[in-house]
Amino acid sequence: MKNVVITGAGRGIGLALVKEFSRQGFRVLGTYRSEKSARELLRLTDEAEVSAVTADITDEKTFGPLVKKLEEWGSVDILVNNAGVIGEMAGSLRELHPRKMMETFDTNTFGPVRVSQAVMPFVSKGGKIAHITSLMGSITDNESGGYYDYRMSKAALNMFNSCLAKEFPQLTCIVLHPGWVQTDMGGAGAAVSPEESARGLCKVILNATLEQSGRFFEYTGRNLPW
Image 1 (spheres, rainbow, N blue to C red):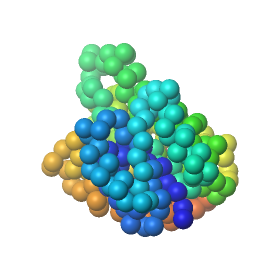
Image 2 (spheres, one colour):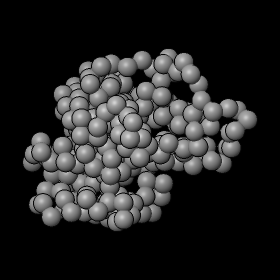
Image 3 (cartoon, rainbow, N blue to C red):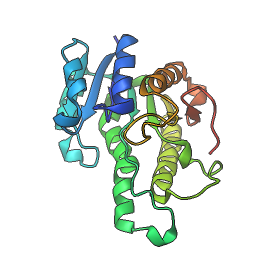
């Protein structure tokens, strides 16, 4: 049985990914920050192959339960860095607050860095690392501007993945746009359900090859511009 770790698994896309990978026959480990926001995930742990541990991706000191579980498993086949925040949504230079911007970067960029550092020793040869980014992190696609902190943090995450792909050529490292999803972040009026997004993301991850490492994909499998 193959093992997958998914961060931010308490709700939204992360929770949907837990369910989808479980349906695909994976042993799943999901991370969450608080029991209040992860009740459904915790109910899923009654199933033999779904586990959940607390971890705040902005604080590596909280990674003890995660590392302990990985030591029990011995290896990880797929890491999905999903946890993220929308940030302050600053629309103008005048609205930017560097301290608040750093909070967004701390979760969206440095969080996946911390998690990858913790999980990498357990990633098996030929394993995969997928980062949930956003099309809003694409410089080419940015026609409207705004959302400074979110766009910048996701663009930096994309560069982190590009570096990983070059440092670890034995792994498949990709960044994925989940679509405009009906979550707390995307809003009820979004075009894609968490379940549809998770099905697509899971398919792209499972089908990704070493030759595609370092690339940027939509949940539909479409290649996206940087």
